[in-house]
Image (cartoon, rainbow, N blue to C red; front, side):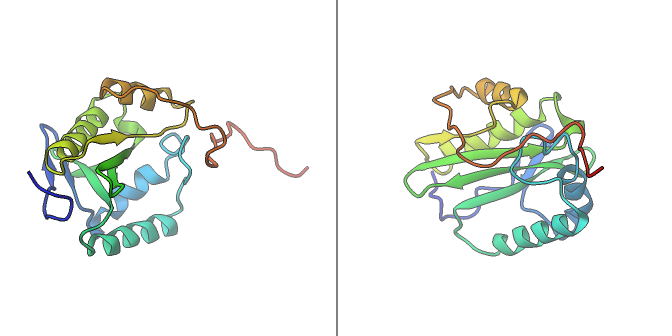
Length: 177
């Protein structure tokens, strides 16, 4: 068994996916999901402009050069297409626990990729990193994410009201008349 500061515990290969560090040439795929209104509907970021997607990818590439690091963000690549369809994150708290997070392009929802990637990441957390607890948070309106977390064996422990500013994108906007 490894410890969080021992490298590498990734990339992680699953039946259909590879969870790996981001690459500079992932930009088009990253921007495709990060600019999709449906994908970011319940996120506290986005939809991204091309500039923001480039800046975020550049920042992730810079962060990847540091080891050890508490936050490990991995590209989720659909192997058969060699396409990045989202990202998965494990944020270590330094106390033997971590939070898991993910974002997948809406075109790839309801195909089992989210479960496959999150399960692989959590398995690495428990087995390779010897974590004792992994948790997640999501917007209570995000029924798809809640179902995924429950399928992973998580249970709801509470609702944090007004914990952070997260908005659902409006169906329409009203501008000045």
